[in-house]
Length: 324
Image (cartoon, rainbow, N blue to C red; front, top):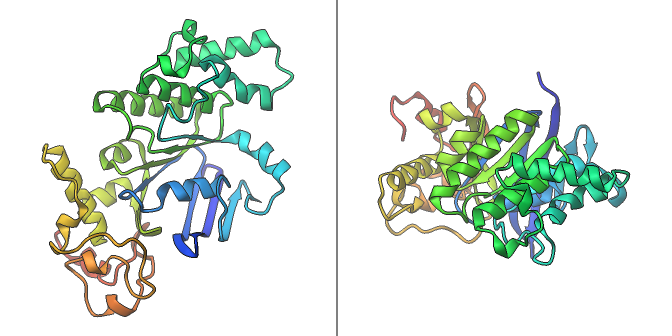
Protein backbone atom coordinates (compact mmCIF):
# COMPACT_ATOMS: atom_id res chain seq x y z
CA UNK A 1 0.00 0.00 0.00
CA UNK A 2 1.26 3.48 -0.85
CA UNK A 3 1.53 6.13 1.83
CA UNK A 4 -1.68 7.72 3.09
CA UNK A 5 -1.26 11.43 2.39
CA UNK A 6 -4.66 13.02 2.94
CA UNK A 7 -7.37 11.91 5.33
CA UNK A 8 -10.60 13.95 5.33
CA UNK A 9 -13.33 13.14 7.84
CA UNK A 10 -16.78 14.75 8.17
CA UNK A 11 -15.60 18.02 6.66
CA UNK A 12 -18.20 20.77 6.71
CA UNK A 13 -18.26 24.28 5.28
CA UNK A 14 -21.01 26.84 5.79
CA UNK A 15 -21.68 30.25 4.24
CA UNK A 16 -24.14 32.43 6.14
CA UNK A 17 -25.21 29.35 8.09
CA UNK A 18 -26.07 27.51 4.90
CA UNK A 19 -24.16 24.26 4.26
CA UNK A 20 -21.90 24.23 1.21
CA UNK A 21 -20.02 21.03 2.08
CA UNK A 22 -21.55 18.37 4.33
CA UNK A 23 -19.97 15.34 6.01
CA UNK A 24 -17.31 14.86 3.36
CA UNK A 25 -14.91 11.98 4.06
CA UNK A 26 -12.25 10.31 1.91
CA UNK A 27 -8.61 9.17 1.81
CA UNK A 28 -5.98 9.92 -0.80
CA UNK A 29 -2.75 7.95 -1.15
CA UNK A 30 0.55 8.82 -2.76
CA UNK A 31 0.43 8.73 -6.55
CA UNK A 32 -3.35 8.25 -6.66
CA UNK A 33 -5.88 10.39 -8.52
CA UNK A 34 -9.30 10.97 -6.98
CA UNK A 35 -11.84 12.61 -9.25
CA UNK A 36 -14.58 14.87 -7.88
CA UNK A 37 -17.54 15.09 -10.25
CA UNK A 38 -20.75 17.07 -10.10
CA UNK A 39 -22.52 19.99 -11.72
CA UNK A 40 -21.69 23.64 -11.03
CA UNK A 41 -22.56 24.65 -7.49
CA UNK A 42 -22.16 21.16 -6.07
CA UNK A 43 -19.41 22.29 -3.67
CA UNK A 44 -16.37 20.77 -5.38
CA UNK A 45 -14.23 23.93 -5.39
CA UNK A 46 -15.35 24.83 -1.88
CA UNK A 47 -14.16 21.43 -0.70
CA UNK A 48 -10.75 21.90 -2.35
CA UNK A 49 -10.26 25.34 -0.82
CA UNK A 50 -11.31 24.13 2.63
CA UNK A 51 -8.75 21.31 2.48
CA UNK A 52 -5.98 23.84 1.82
CA UNK A 53 -7.46 26.30 4.36
CA UNK A 54 -7.97 28.94 1.70
CA UNK A 55 -11.42 29.20 3.26
CA UNK A 56 -12.48 28.21 6.77
CA UNK A 57 -14.17 24.91 7.50
CA UNK A 58 -16.95 24.87 10.09
CA UNK A 59 -16.26 21.32 11.25
CA UNK A 60 -14.53 18.04 10.62
CA UNK A 61 -10.92 17.02 10.21
CA UNK A 62 -8.27 17.26 7.49
CA UNK A 63 -5.08 15.32 8.20
CA UNK A 64 -2.00 15.68 6.03
CA UNK A 65 0.35 12.73 6.61
CA UNK A 66 -1.12 12.37 10.09
CA UNK A 67 -0.99 16.07 10.99
CA UNK A 68 -4.19 18.05 11.47
CA UNK A 69 -4.37 20.99 9.06
CA UNK A 70 -7.46 22.74 10.37
CA UNK A 71 -5.93 23.54 13.75
CA UNK A 72 -2.19 23.84 13.03
CA UNK A 73 -0.50 27.22 13.37
CA UNK A 74 -0.20 29.57 10.37
CA UNK A 75 3.58 29.11 10.43
CA UNK A 76 3.28 25.34 10.31
CA UNK A 77 0.58 25.50 7.64
CA UNK A 78 2.81 27.67 5.46
CA UNK A 79 5.59 25.07 5.70
CA UNK A 80 3.23 22.19 4.88
CA UNK A 81 1.86 23.96 1.82
CA UNK A 82 5.10 23.28 -0.01
CA UNK A 83 3.81 19.78 -0.64
CA UNK A 84 0.22 20.85 -1.45
CA UNK A 85 -0.31 22.94 -4.57
CA UNK A 86 -3.36 23.96 -6.60
CA UNK A 87 -4.10 24.78 -10.23
CA UNK A 88 -7.06 27.14 -10.53
CA UNK A 89 -9.90 27.23 -13.03
CA UNK A 90 -9.21 30.61 -14.65
CA UNK A 91 -5.60 30.54 -15.85
CA UNK A 92 -5.29 34.26 -16.58
CA UNK A 93 -6.93 35.43 -13.34
CA UNK A 94 -4.62 33.22 -11.27
CA UNK A 95 -1.48 34.97 -12.54
CA UNK A 96 -0.22 38.37 -11.44
CA UNK A 97 -0.50 40.62 -14.52
CA UNK A 98 2.51 42.67 -13.35
CA UNK A 99 4.78 39.67 -12.95
CA UNK A 100 6.56 37.95 -15.83
CA UNK A 101 5.83 34.27 -16.16
CA UNK A 102 9.41 33.39 -15.18
CA UNK A 103 9.03 35.41 -11.98
CA UNK A 104 5.64 33.80 -11.31
CA UNK A 105 7.12 30.30 -11.60
CA UNK A 106 10.18 31.29 -9.57
CA UNK A 107 8.16 32.77 -6.69
CA UNK A 108 7.57 29.44 -4.88
CA UNK A 109 11.31 28.76 -5.04
CA UNK A 110 12.06 32.16 -3.50
CA UNK A 111 9.64 31.40 -0.66
CA UNK A 112 10.55 27.78 0.11
CA UNK A 113 14.16 27.60 -1.11
CA UNK A 114 15.58 31.07 -0.38
CA UNK A 115 19.11 29.67 -0.24
CA UNK A 116 18.96 28.76 -3.94
CA UNK A 117 21.27 30.90 -6.09
CA UNK A 118 19.66 33.07 -8.76
CA UNK A 119 21.36 31.17 -11.57
CA UNK A 120 20.21 27.81 -10.26
CA UNK A 121 16.69 29.15 -9.76
CA UNK A 122 16.58 30.46 -13.33
CA UNK A 123 17.76 27.08 -14.60
CA UNK A 124 14.96 25.27 -12.80
CA UNK A 125 12.39 27.72 -14.12
CA UNK A 126 13.65 27.27 -17.67
CA UNK A 127 13.57 23.48 -17.32
CA UNK A 128 10.01 23.56 -15.99
CA UNK A 129 8.84 25.87 -18.77
CA UNK A 130 10.25 23.45 -21.29
CA UNK A 131 8.65 20.51 -19.43
CA UNK A 132 5.16 22.02 -19.75
CA UNK A 133 5.66 22.74 -23.45
CA UNK A 134 6.66 26.40 -23.41
CA UNK A 135 9.80 27.99 -24.83
CA UNK A 136 12.10 29.04 -21.95
CA UNK A 137 12.89 32.19 -23.96
CA UNK A 138 9.33 33.34 -23.33
CA UNK A 139 9.92 33.67 -19.59
CA UNK A 140 10.26 37.44 -19.72
CA UNK A 141 6.79 37.93 -21.18
CA UNK A 142 3.66 38.75 -19.21
CA UNK A 143 0.39 36.79 -18.86
CA UNK A 144 -1.61 39.00 -21.24
CA UNK A 145 0.77 38.00 -24.04
CA UNK A 146 -0.29 34.34 -23.79
CA UNK A 147 -3.35 32.33 -24.72
CA UNK A 148 -5.54 30.69 -22.11
CA UNK A 149 -3.95 27.30 -22.70
CA UNK A 150 -0.45 28.75 -22.39
CA UNK A 151 -1.40 30.55 -19.15
CA UNK A 152 -2.69 27.27 -17.75
CA UNK A 153 0.63 25.66 -18.61
CA UNK A 154 2.31 28.45 -16.64
CA UNK A 155 -0.03 27.76 -13.71
CA UNK A 156 0.85 24.07 -13.83
CA UNK A 157 4.56 24.89 -14.01
CA UNK A 158 4.25 27.18 -10.98
CA UNK A 159 2.45 24.45 -9.03
CA UNK A 160 4.92 21.70 -9.98
CA UNK A 161 8.18 23.64 -9.56
CA UNK A 162 8.44 22.43 -5.94
CA UNK A 163 7.63 18.80 -6.86
CA UNK A 164 4.63 18.66 -4.48
CA UNK A 165 3.19 15.44 -3.13
CA UNK A 166 -0.38 16.63 -3.82
CA UNK A 167 -1.74 18.64 -6.73
CA UNK A 168 -5.33 19.88 -6.57
CA UNK A 169 -6.72 20.68 -10.02
CA UNK A 170 -9.85 22.82 -9.74
CA UNK A 171 -11.62 22.64 -13.12
CA UNK A 172 -8.28 23.21 -14.90
CA UNK A 173 -9.65 22.82 -18.44
CA UNK A 174 -13.20 24.18 -18.23
CA UNK A 175 -12.15 27.70 -19.33
CA UNK A 176 -10.17 26.41 -22.32
CA UNK A 177 -11.10 25.61 -25.90
CA UNK A 178 -11.96 21.97 -26.50
CA UNK A 179 -8.96 21.64 -28.80
CA UNK A 180 -6.65 22.66 -25.94
CA UNK A 181 -8.31 20.67 -23.16
CA UNK A 182 -6.87 17.34 -24.29
CA UNK A 183 -3.35 18.77 -24.35
CA UNK A 184 -3.62 20.01 -20.77
CA UNK A 185 -5.13 16.75 -19.53
CA UNK A 186 -2.34 14.76 -21.18
CA UNK A 187 0.24 17.10 -19.68
CA UNK A 188 -1.19 16.55 -16.19
CA UNK A 189 -1.19 12.79 -16.69
CA UNK A 190 2.43 12.84 -17.88
CA UNK A 191 3.57 15.01 -14.96
CA UNK A 192 1.82 12.78 -12.46
CA UNK A 193 3.48 9.71 -13.94
CA UNK A 194 6.87 11.42 -13.94
CA UNK A 195 6.77 12.93 -10.44
CA UNK A 196 4.46 10.44 -8.66
CA UNK A 197 2.21 13.25 -7.48
CA UNK A 198 -1.17 12.47 -5.92
CA UNK A 199 -3.98 14.41 -7.56
CA UNK A 200 -7.40 15.63 -6.53
CA UNK A 201 -9.03 16.37 -9.87
CA UNK A 202 -12.21 18.45 -9.92
CA UNK A 203 -14.37 18.69 -13.01
CA UNK A 204 -17.93 18.57 -14.27
CA UNK A 205 -16.59 16.94 -17.45
CA UNK A 206 -16.92 13.21 -16.82
CA UNK A 207 -14.85 12.28 -19.86
CA UNK A 208 -11.88 14.17 -18.39
CA UNK A 209 -12.46 12.73 -14.92
CA UNK A 210 -12.59 9.23 -16.37
CA UNK A 211 -9.33 9.71 -18.27
CA UNK A 212 -7.33 10.78 -15.21
CA UNK A 213 -8.94 9.23 -12.14
CA UNK A 214 -8.62 5.89 -10.44
CA UNK A 215 -11.50 6.57 -8.08
CA UNK A 216 -14.41 8.97 -8.46
CA UNK A 217 -16.65 10.73 -5.95
CA UNK A 218 -19.93 12.18 -7.20
CA UNK A 219 -21.03 15.25 -5.25
CA UNK A 220 -24.51 16.76 -5.07
CA UNK A 221 -25.25 19.90 -3.04
CA UNK A 222 -22.11 19.54 -0.96
CA UNK A 223 -22.49 15.86 -0.11
CA UNK A 224 -20.96 12.73 -1.59
CA UNK A 225 -23.76 10.62 -3.07
CA UNK A 226 -21.58 7.96 -4.68
CA UNK A 227 -17.98 6.82 -4.49
CA UNK A 228 -16.44 3.98 -6.47
CA UNK A 229 -13.58 2.83 -8.62
CA UNK A 230 -13.72 4.53 -12.01
CA UNK A 231 -14.66 1.48 -14.04
CA UNK A 232 -17.32 0.37 -11.54
CA UNK A 233 -18.97 3.78 -11.52
CA UNK A 234 -19.11 4.05 -15.29
CA UNK A 235 -20.25 0.44 -15.73
CA UNK A 236 -23.04 0.58 -13.16
CA UNK A 237 -23.77 3.75 -11.16
CA UNK A 238 -25.90 3.09 -8.09
CA UNK A 239 -27.27 6.59 -7.46
CA UNK A 240 -29.82 8.21 -9.81
CA UNK A 241 -27.82 11.45 -9.85
CA UNK A 242 -24.71 9.63 -11.09
CA UNK A 243 -26.84 7.99 -13.77
CA UNK A 244 -28.14 11.40 -14.80
CA UNK A 245 -24.62 12.81 -15.03
CA UNK A 246 -23.50 9.92 -17.22
CA UNK A 247 -26.55 10.30 -19.42
CA UNK A 248 -25.89 14.03 -19.81
CA UNK A 249 -22.27 13.31 -20.71
CA UNK A 250 -23.42 10.84 -23.38
CA UNK A 251 -25.78 13.44 -24.83
CA UNK A 252 -22.99 16.01 -24.96
CA UNK A 253 -20.65 13.50 -26.60
CA UNK A 254 -23.20 13.00 -29.38
CA UNK A 255 -23.18 16.73 -30.07
CA UNK A 256 -26.58 17.58 -28.60
CA UNK A 257 -27.08 21.10 -27.31
CA UNK A 258 -27.99 19.96 -23.82
CA UNK A 259 -26.02 18.81 -20.84
CA UNK A 260 -28.91 19.29 -18.46
CA UNK A 261 -28.80 16.80 -15.64
CA UNK A 262 -32.50 17.43 -15.06
CA UNK A 263 -33.26 15.48 -18.23
CA UNK A 264 -33.03 12.29 -16.17
CA UNK A 265 -35.75 13.48 -13.79
CA UNK A 266 -39.25 14.91 -14.01
CA UNK A 267 -39.58 17.72 -16.60
CA UNK A 268 -40.61 20.20 -13.91
CA UNK A 269 -37.72 19.40 -11.63
CA UNK A 270 -34.93 21.93 -11.28
CA UNK A 271 -31.86 22.12 -9.06
CA UNK A 272 -32.28 23.30 -5.51
CA UNK A 273 -30.29 26.27 -4.29
CA UNK A 274 -29.68 24.49 -0.96
CA UNK A 275 -30.10 21.05 0.53
CA UNK A 276 -33.41 20.41 2.30
CA UNK A 277 -33.26 20.03 6.06
CA UNK A 278 -34.77 16.52 5.98
CA UNK A 279 -34.88 13.66 3.52
CA UNK A 280 -32.89 13.10 0.35
CA UNK A 281 -31.61 16.29 -1.29
CA UNK A 282 -32.09 14.83 -4.76
CA UNK A 283 -35.65 13.59 -4.31
CA UNK A 284 -37.43 16.34 -6.27
CA UNK A 285 -35.33 15.62 -9.33
CA UNK A 286 -35.42 11.84 -9.04
CA UNK A 287 -37.88 9.63 -10.89
CA UNK A 288 -37.06 6.76 -8.50
CA UNK A 289 -37.96 8.54 -5.24
CA UNK A 290 -40.10 6.76 -2.65
CA UNK A 291 -41.83 7.81 0.55
CA UNK A 292 -38.70 7.33 2.67
CA UNK A 293 -36.87 9.91 0.55
CA UNK A 294 -39.15 12.64 1.92
CA UNK A 295 -38.20 12.18 5.57
CA UNK A 296 -34.98 10.15 5.85
CA UNK A 297 -31.61 11.22 4.46
CA UNK A 298 -29.96 8.09 3.03
CA UNK A 299 -26.54 7.33 4.53
CA UNK A 300 -23.51 6.73 2.35
CA UNK A 301 -23.31 2.93 2.54
CA UNK A 302 -21.11 0.28 0.95
CA UNK A 303 -23.43 -1.45 -1.51
CA UNK A 304 -20.79 -3.48 -3.33
CA UNK A 305 -17.07 -3.96 -2.74
CA UNK A 306 -15.55 -0.45 -2.42
CA UNK A 307 -18.69 0.98 -4.05
CA UNK A 308 -20.62 3.41 -1.83
CA UNK A 309 -23.93 5.13 -2.54
CA UNK A 310 -26.32 7.37 -0.59
CA UNK A 311 -29.67 6.15 -1.91
CA UNK A 312 -32.49 4.20 -0.28
CA UNK A 313 -32.80 2.06 -3.41
CA UNK A 314 -29.10 1.53 -4.18
CA UNK A 315 -29.14 -2.16 -3.24
CA UNK A 316 -32.15 -2.66 -5.45
CA UNK A 317 -30.27 -0.96 -8.31
CA UNK A 318 -27.20 -3.07 -7.57
CA UNK A 319 -29.20 -6.29 -7.91
CA UNK A 320 -30.88 -5.15 -11.12
CA UNK A 321 -29.39 -6.17 -14.46
CA UNK A 322 -29.57 -2.68 -15.87
CA UNK A 323 -28.63 0.74 -14.59
CA UNK A 324 -31.72 2.63 -13.24
